[in-house]
Length: 79
Image 1 (cartoon, rainbow, N blue to C red):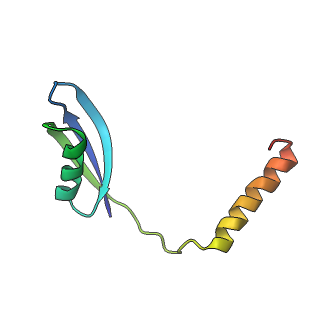
Image 2: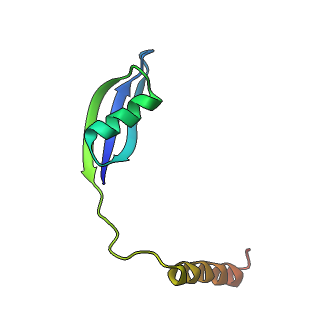
């Protein structure tokens, strides 16, 4: 996936910056953008590739993360 960053001008003339949309192509990202901002003008578009996760998440890893967070919270006295 690629992260697209848009700076736009709305149909009412207001400038909106740094709208981030993850999409497989710029056309798809622009389509999603225009669903949120009808009749907008795209002032700038920047793309950045996002690295894929190498390791899939599994239930044991998630439980370990939660347990580690709970034990550190109990040691500090907050819950």
